[in-house]
Length: 319
Image (cartoon, rainbow, N blue to C red):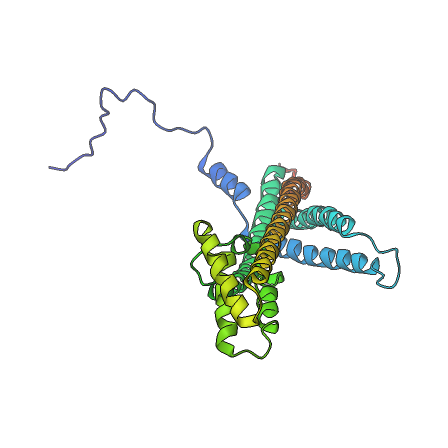
């Protein structure tokens, strides 16, 4: 006995089966009309990237031509930064337009919506490539900067002793460009000890370092020990040594406070520049996406039609 498939439907299934008024041939034509041509997308992305490079080189050449080291007509850093941001936005729009139009044209689609999406895809691919290249370059720069900061912090920690975290260590962003706040004090102490033995110099330097960087609750005892060591090393009265210790402590605190202020200003400047760059980048991306979309929309091709008409023939009947 032959088995027949069960074509009955459950009682709860009251939805109609999926139906379409289009024929299979029309379905295939619709899929072909709206399918993605990745070759066209990649070609458009390549053109967009090349156009971006060319436009950036043009902007760089124009910007460098305005710099006159020997004259006073050189634009300020702020104006150059603003001009570079504006040109970055303009060049991104132009490059996205070129890539979007070419992607839409090479897709060969007669539907303007499909070519518009091809332009948008070309913009997205080129943007991902640019973001990858920038992240790789920025990653290398950040890695190098982190290594420099780490080495500087390590040197400062070895010098001060690592027992306390002074304000100079907290000002990490400015450490690579600053001198050690204790270096001047150490040189003064060593130069002021005359021809005394090296052990006395080292003892005076160690006591002075503990006096300016030690615990605040034990600072008075540390300063007194530093005054005693300094008086012994320089062969001066203890009162005079105490005065020098107070001056050195004030000098150290002033240097640390100045370093913190410089670090704060540098951080504020970096935050402001980063914010402006992010806004310029977002504006360029949004305008570039719109430009690529409408450029691809306008690049739709006209369908190529080939029609053959059947010639009408007159049939003659012979009688």
